[in-house]
Length: 179
Image (tube, rainbow, N blue to C red; front, side, top):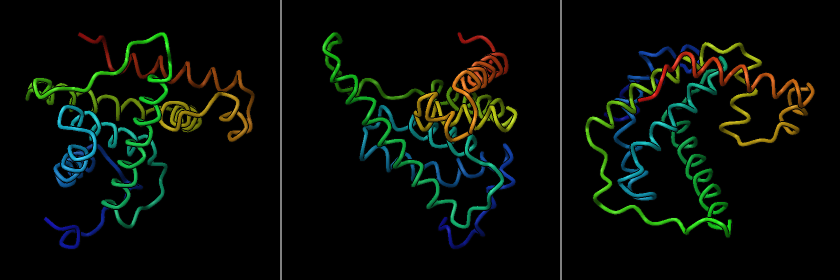
């Protein structure tokens, strides 16, 4: 289904059903995108990361071209992944990162568990108070320091710390125990 045959959805009203629809519509293309760039073993996790960021960033602004927006997020996910991997490699006290082999393919059960966890996380992040969600997104997805977040939000670093702590407690409560 081409994006031109479907009117562009409005991100400002991103409900769980819409996100699931976007996952169904754009998920296969995102998986192909990630398989080519990061390998099949990580593609599903990276697609989920895209949708977590989409839900976390939806602050009421309309998006004309959802597909373009999703692939922009996908590119940012790859950049973050590369930075994180580079930081791990630079650490001399850890073993080198090993490449995933074909045996690490994602099972249907793992994919379903991941989708359920993504849905629960999206709801938990969406339920956060706006300022707490903003601090959480800056910290977890944009990887800013507390000082940088404090400057952007015009609050103290301890205020940022309290927002992050509240967000983590809320998300852990909503997500339930991990098995």
